[in-house]
Image (tube, rainbow, N blue to C red):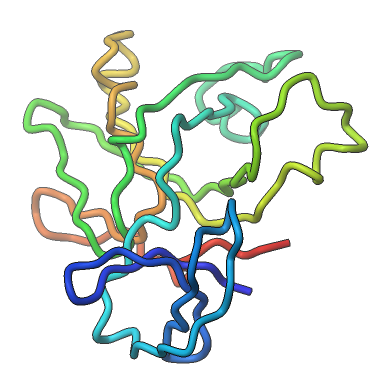
Length: 183
């Protein structure tokens, strides 16, 4: 099941992709989520970021090859960072690069969508709290990050967008996954 959040007729809804259509559902994936009868062709809907989270928690340097590429060793414990929900953009929204950055990079990531509040969950129960997975386009102003400025951490890692636009108009990446895949 591929859950999407979309807008049609100036109303935001949740639904499920079925071929080239979105089947509208009532409720949300976190509450009672029931299949409706309305089918909307994807070309008539505006696909939005699949979720509106209260926060975004990222894991840094958990990819050993990336750490080595930067001349660093991977830490023994993962580091975490928070992102504001305002960093989200939809699948077809442009990513606006900061005018004073000269080194903006993107990385494909896996996003895990949590379905309910949790804390101190044992590893064997972790999946009980997962709603699903989606693609993530992690965009970072590396020159800001290297200077240690907080600007690099405040909204430049745009989640759930499958289009990034360089100043010259070049699109470095286009993903095909537009929703949350339920496990």
